[in-house]
Length: 143
Image (cartoon, rainbow, N blue to C red; front, side, top):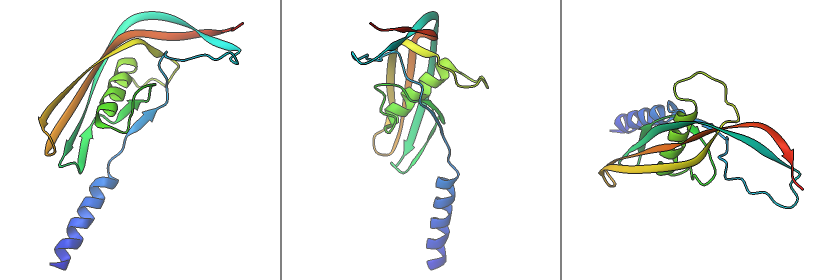
């Protein structure tokens, strides 16, 4: 019986240790400027973009889904919904590209969130985002 407990603990630890995720601290265009700011970004609004991302959980202990996230303003990436939104934002800007992270942002991001499954047992949350690609082309002085 003791051996079985040790095996279960070892397997659980291996599963948890084997998980990985990526997070990016790019911020959306919801920047507020104070009177102390001396520059502000010049943002060129480009093509429409969209992306989606999902996170799932089983018994509140195991989670899965997308593993690349774009941490943006007003997204709490510590929740499954926040992680789904952050994954959707990442996929909208970068998709499956192997591009380096840049200063592009999502302008006027609109999210749609959908929950499926059985609460507290097996749950999945998926988010879709739509907006426009915003590219910072320079900075201007604020008077």
